[in-house]
Length: 299
Image (tube, rainbow, N blue to C red; front, top):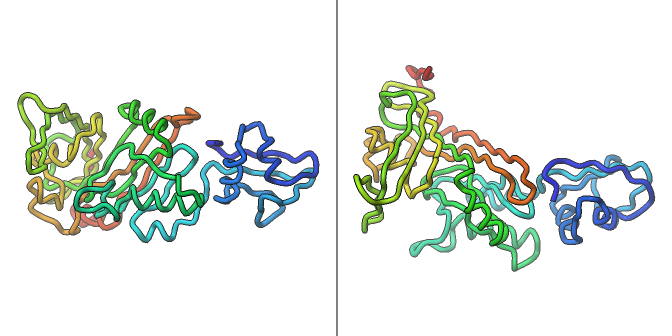
Protein backbone atom coordinates (compact mmCIF):
# COMPACT_ATOMS: atom_id res chain seq x y z
CA UNK A 1 0.00 0.00 0.00
CA UNK A 2 1.23 3.55 -0.67
CA UNK A 3 2.90 5.38 2.20
CA UNK A 4 2.71 8.85 0.60
CA UNK A 5 0.23 10.54 -1.76
CA UNK A 6 0.42 9.25 -5.34
CA UNK A 7 -1.04 10.96 -8.41
CA UNK A 8 -1.73 9.32 -11.78
CA UNK A 9 -2.93 10.74 -15.08
CA UNK A 10 -5.57 8.70 -16.93
CA UNK A 11 -4.77 8.01 -20.59
CA UNK A 12 -7.93 6.22 -21.74
CA UNK A 13 -11.59 5.82 -20.73
CA UNK A 14 -12.09 3.17 -18.04
CA UNK A 15 -13.69 2.33 -14.69
CA UNK A 16 -11.95 3.37 -11.48
CA UNK A 17 -11.56 -0.01 -9.76
CA UNK A 18 -9.82 -1.80 -12.69
CA UNK A 19 -7.70 1.33 -13.16
CA UNK A 20 -6.48 1.17 -9.55
CA UNK A 21 -5.66 -2.53 -9.82
CA UNK A 22 -3.67 -1.89 -13.01
CA UNK A 23 -1.47 0.80 -11.47
CA UNK A 24 2.22 0.02 -10.82
CA UNK A 25 1.58 0.01 -7.05
CA UNK A 26 0.83 -3.71 -6.99
CA UNK A 27 -2.60 -3.29 -5.41
CA UNK A 28 -4.77 -6.37 -5.05
CA UNK A 29 -8.50 -6.14 -5.75
CA UNK A 30 -9.18 -6.13 -1.98
CA UNK A 31 -6.61 -3.39 -1.34
CA UNK A 32 -8.06 -1.23 -4.11
CA UNK A 33 -11.59 -1.70 -2.74
CA UNK A 34 -10.36 -0.83 0.76
CA UNK A 35 -8.86 2.42 -0.53
CA UNK A 36 -12.23 3.30 -2.06
CA UNK A 37 -14.13 2.24 1.06
CA UNK A 38 -11.93 4.41 3.29
CA UNK A 39 -12.19 7.37 0.89
CA UNK A 40 -8.47 7.45 0.20
CA UNK A 41 -8.99 7.86 -3.58
CA UNK A 42 -10.06 11.10 -5.25
CA UNK A 43 -10.42 12.34 -8.82
CA UNK A 44 -9.67 16.00 -9.45
CA UNK A 45 -12.93 16.96 -11.21
CA UNK A 46 -15.27 14.93 -8.96
CA UNK A 47 -16.64 15.43 -5.45
CA UNK A 48 -17.02 11.68 -4.78
CA UNK A 49 -16.03 8.42 -6.45
CA UNK A 50 -17.17 4.78 -6.49
CA UNK A 51 -15.68 1.55 -7.81
CA UNK A 52 -17.57 1.99 -11.11
CA UNK A 53 -16.80 5.71 -11.58
CA UNK A 54 -16.01 6.37 -15.24
CA UNK A 55 -12.63 7.96 -15.83
CA UNK A 56 -11.83 10.07 -18.89
CA UNK A 57 -8.47 10.79 -20.55
CA UNK A 58 -6.71 13.57 -18.67
CA UNK A 59 -8.35 12.82 -15.30
CA UNK A 60 -5.97 12.94 -12.33
CA UNK A 61 -6.38 10.20 -9.71
CA UNK A 62 -4.87 10.80 -6.25
CA UNK A 63 -4.30 8.02 -3.69
CA UNK A 64 -3.81 9.43 -0.20
CA UNK A 65 -1.25 8.04 2.24
CA UNK A 66 -3.60 7.11 5.09
CA UNK A 67 -7.10 5.72 4.80
CA UNK A 68 -9.58 8.33 5.92
CA UNK A 69 -12.19 6.55 8.01
CA UNK A 70 -15.21 7.64 10.00
CA UNK A 71 -14.06 7.91 13.62
CA UNK A 72 -16.97 9.27 15.68
CA UNK A 73 -18.09 5.94 17.09
CA UNK A 74 -14.65 4.68 18.11
CA UNK A 75 -13.70 8.06 19.60
CA UNK A 76 -16.71 7.91 21.89
CA UNK A 77 -15.25 4.70 23.31
CA UNK A 78 -11.88 6.24 24.11
CA UNK A 79 -9.80 5.64 20.97
CA UNK A 80 -8.85 7.89 18.08
CA UNK A 81 -7.28 6.42 14.96
CA UNK A 82 -4.24 8.51 14.00
CA UNK A 83 -3.04 6.34 11.11
CA UNK A 84 -4.22 3.15 9.42
CA UNK A 85 -2.96 1.10 6.49
CA UNK A 86 -3.01 -2.60 5.59
CA UNK A 87 -0.19 -3.39 8.02
CA UNK A 88 -0.37 -1.12 11.07
CA UNK A 89 -2.75 1.04 13.11
CA UNK A 90 -1.64 3.92 15.32
CA UNK A 91 -4.20 5.13 17.86
CA UNK A 92 -4.53 7.72 20.61
CA UNK A 93 -5.77 5.95 23.76
CA UNK A 94 -7.69 7.81 26.43
CA UNK A 95 -6.60 7.49 30.08
CA UNK A 96 -8.72 4.94 31.95
CA UNK A 97 -8.91 2.47 29.07
CA UNK A 98 -7.08 -0.86 29.33
CA UNK A 99 -4.75 -1.73 26.45
CA UNK A 100 -5.87 -5.37 26.43
CA UNK A 101 -8.12 -7.71 28.35
CA UNK A 102 -7.52 -8.75 31.95
CA UNK A 103 -9.26 -11.09 34.36
CA UNK A 104 -11.40 -8.21 35.58
CA UNK A 105 -12.13 -6.56 32.21
CA UNK A 106 -12.32 -8.21 28.82
CA UNK A 107 -14.82 -6.08 26.90
CA UNK A 108 -13.88 -2.41 27.28
CA UNK A 109 -10.27 -2.48 26.13
CA UNK A 110 -8.39 -0.68 23.35
CA UNK A 111 -7.70 -4.03 21.69
CA UNK A 112 -11.34 -5.14 21.71
CA UNK A 113 -12.71 -1.76 20.60
CA UNK A 114 -10.25 -1.55 17.71
CA UNK A 115 -11.01 -5.12 16.62
CA UNK A 116 -14.74 -4.44 16.47
CA UNK A 117 -14.12 -1.19 14.60
CA UNK A 118 -11.96 -2.88 11.95
CA UNK A 119 -14.52 -5.66 11.48
CA UNK A 120 -17.27 -3.10 10.94
CA UNK A 121 -15.19 -1.02 8.53
CA UNK A 122 -14.11 -3.91 6.35
CA UNK A 123 -17.32 -5.93 6.80
CA UNK A 124 -15.13 -8.91 7.59
CA UNK A 125 -15.39 -10.88 10.87
CA UNK A 126 -11.84 -12.13 10.27
CA UNK A 127 -10.34 -8.66 10.72
CA UNK A 128 -8.35 -8.11 13.89
CA UNK A 129 -5.52 -6.11 15.37
CA UNK A 130 -2.51 -7.60 17.16
CA UNK A 131 -0.92 -5.94 20.18
CA UNK A 132 2.64 -4.69 19.67
CA UNK A 133 3.08 -2.94 23.04
CA UNK A 134 0.94 -1.78 25.94
CA UNK A 135 0.18 1.40 27.83
CA UNK A 136 -0.93 1.36 31.46
CA UNK A 137 -4.66 1.88 31.92
CA UNK A 138 -3.97 5.30 33.49
CA UNK A 139 -1.62 6.43 30.69
CA UNK A 140 -2.95 8.24 27.61
CA UNK A 141 -1.47 8.67 24.16
CA UNK A 142 -0.03 6.82 21.19
CA UNK A 143 -0.23 3.05 20.79
CA UNK A 144 0.56 0.91 17.77
CA UNK A 145 -1.13 -2.31 16.64
CA UNK A 146 -0.25 -4.72 13.83
CA UNK A 147 -2.88 -6.04 11.43
CA UNK A 148 -1.36 -9.51 11.09
CA UNK A 149 0.75 -11.86 13.18
CA UNK A 150 3.78 -11.65 10.82
CA UNK A 151 3.75 -7.84 11.06
CA UNK A 152 3.37 -8.08 14.84
CA UNK A 153 6.44 -10.32 14.98
CA UNK A 154 8.51 -7.92 12.84
CA UNK A 155 7.55 -4.89 14.94
CA UNK A 156 8.24 -6.63 18.23
CA UNK A 157 11.55 -7.97 16.94
CA UNK A 158 12.67 -4.42 16.13
CA UNK A 159 10.90 -2.69 19.03
CA UNK A 160 14.22 -1.46 20.46
CA UNK A 161 14.69 0.58 17.27
CA UNK A 162 11.39 2.44 17.79
CA UNK A 163 11.67 5.89 19.40
CA UNK A 164 9.15 6.02 22.26
CA UNK A 165 8.75 9.35 24.04
CA UNK A 166 6.47 10.32 26.93
CA UNK A 167 5.58 13.51 28.74
CA UNK A 168 4.99 13.49 32.49
CA UNK A 169 4.23 16.03 35.17
CA UNK A 170 6.17 15.04 38.28
CA UNK A 171 6.25 16.24 41.86
CA UNK A 172 9.11 18.61 42.62
CA UNK A 173 12.08 19.27 40.33
CA UNK A 174 14.92 16.83 39.53
CA UNK A 175 18.30 18.17 40.61
CA UNK A 176 19.73 17.51 37.14
CA UNK A 177 18.03 18.95 34.04
CA UNK A 178 18.65 15.76 32.12
CA UNK A 179 20.02 12.30 32.72
CA UNK A 180 19.65 8.55 32.34
CA UNK A 181 18.04 6.29 34.94
CA UNK A 182 19.25 2.69 35.07
CA UNK A 183 17.59 0.14 37.31
CA UNK A 184 16.77 -3.53 37.63
CA UNK A 185 13.05 -4.11 38.13
CA UNK A 186 11.07 -7.03 39.52
CA UNK A 187 7.33 -7.48 40.02
CA UNK A 188 5.95 -8.46 43.42
CA UNK A 189 3.03 -10.79 44.06
CA UNK A 190 0.86 -7.69 44.45
CA UNK A 191 1.71 -6.66 40.85
CA UNK A 192 3.83 -3.73 41.99
CA UNK A 193 7.23 -3.13 40.38
CA UNK A 194 10.31 -2.70 42.58
CA UNK A 195 13.90 -1.67 42.00
CA UNK A 196 16.44 -4.27 43.12
CA UNK A 197 20.22 -4.35 43.40
CA UNK A 198 20.57 -7.75 41.74
CA UNK A 199 18.49 -9.81 39.35
CA UNK A 200 15.32 -8.53 37.77
CA UNK A 201 15.07 -6.99 34.30
CA UNK A 202 17.17 -3.99 33.23
CA UNK A 203 15.22 -0.75 32.78
CA UNK A 204 16.73 2.31 31.12
CA UNK A 205 15.00 5.68 30.76
CA UNK A 206 16.45 8.96 29.46
CA UNK A 207 14.81 12.12 30.81
CA UNK A 208 14.89 15.84 30.13
CA UNK A 209 13.23 18.52 32.25
CA UNK A 210 11.24 20.89 30.01
CA UNK A 211 9.66 23.19 32.61
CA UNK A 212 9.87 23.64 36.36
CA UNK A 213 7.45 25.21 38.81
CA UNK A 214 7.09 25.70 42.52
CA UNK A 215 6.07 22.12 43.22
CA UNK A 216 5.88 20.35 39.81
CA UNK A 217 7.95 19.81 36.66
CA UNK A 218 7.21 18.80 33.07
CA UNK A 219 9.58 16.04 32.00
CA UNK A 220 10.17 14.39 28.60
CA UNK A 221 11.11 10.71 28.88
CA UNK A 222 12.54 8.43 26.22
CA UNK A 223 12.40 4.69 26.80
CA UNK A 224 15.38 2.55 25.92
CA UNK A 225 13.67 -0.50 27.46
CA UNK A 226 9.97 -1.04 28.03
CA UNK A 227 9.30 -2.71 31.36
CA UNK A 228 5.95 -2.67 33.12
CA UNK A 229 5.41 0.66 34.99
CA UNK A 230 9.01 1.57 34.10
CA UNK A 231 8.67 5.34 33.99
CA UNK A 232 6.44 5.41 37.05
CA UNK A 233 8.72 3.37 39.32
CA UNK A 234 11.91 5.05 38.11
CA UNK A 235 10.64 8.60 38.59
CA UNK A 236 9.44 7.62 42.05
CA UNK A 237 12.87 6.15 42.74
CA UNK A 238 14.41 9.45 41.69
CA UNK A 239 12.29 11.12 44.36
CA UNK A 240 9.85 12.71 41.91
CA UNK A 241 6.77 10.50 41.47
CA UNK A 242 4.39 11.28 38.65
CA UNK A 243 1.53 13.51 39.74
CA UNK A 244 -1.54 11.40 40.50
CA UNK A 245 0.42 8.16 40.83
CA UNK A 246 -0.70 7.05 44.28
CA UNK A 247 0.60 3.53 43.58
CA UNK A 248 4.18 4.81 43.52
CA UNK A 249 4.07 7.47 46.20
CA UNK A 250 2.48 10.59 44.68
CA UNK A 251 1.02 12.93 47.29
CA UNK A 252 -1.07 15.14 44.98
CA UNK A 253 -3.64 14.37 42.28
CA UNK A 254 -5.06 17.68 40.99
CA UNK A 255 -6.03 16.30 37.56
CA UNK A 256 -7.61 13.17 39.05
CA UNK A 257 -5.57 10.98 36.72
CA UNK A 258 -2.00 9.85 36.17
CA UNK A 259 -0.05 12.72 34.57
CA UNK A 260 1.70 10.50 32.00
CA UNK A 261 1.20 10.68 28.23
CA UNK A 262 2.72 8.74 25.31
CA UNK A 263 3.53 11.61 22.94
CA UNK A 264 5.77 10.25 20.17
CA UNK A 265 6.41 7.10 18.14
CA UNK A 266 9.07 7.06 15.43
CA UNK A 267 9.93 3.95 13.42
CA UNK A 268 10.44 2.43 9.99
CA UNK A 269 7.34 0.94 8.37
CA UNK A 270 7.58 -2.87 8.66
CA UNK A 271 6.73 -3.42 4.97
CA UNK A 272 7.70 -0.35 2.96
CA UNK A 273 10.63 0.73 5.13
CA UNK A 274 9.35 4.32 5.02
CA UNK A 275 10.15 6.57 7.98
CA UNK A 276 7.03 7.02 10.12
CA UNK A 277 6.74 9.66 12.83
CA UNK A 278 3.71 10.42 14.99
CA UNK A 279 3.45 13.10 17.67
CA UNK A 280 0.48 14.05 19.79
CA UNK A 281 0.19 16.91 22.26
CA UNK A 282 -0.27 16.35 25.97
CA UNK A 283 -3.94 16.68 27.01
CA UNK A 284 -4.82 20.21 28.10
CA UNK A 285 -5.97 18.83 31.45
CA UNK A 286 -2.38 17.81 32.17
CA UNK A 287 -0.69 20.82 30.59
CA UNK A 288 -2.79 23.03 32.88
CA UNK A 289 -0.90 21.53 35.82
CA UNK A 290 2.36 23.09 34.65
CA UNK A 291 1.14 26.25 32.92
CA UNK A 292 0.30 28.14 36.09
CA UNK A 293 2.18 31.23 37.18
CA UNK A 294 5.69 30.76 38.42
CA UNK A 295 6.54 28.02 35.95
CA UNK A 296 9.82 28.42 34.07
CA UNK A 297 11.21 26.65 31.04
CA UNK A 298 14.29 24.60 31.77
CA UNK A 299 17.42 25.77 29.99
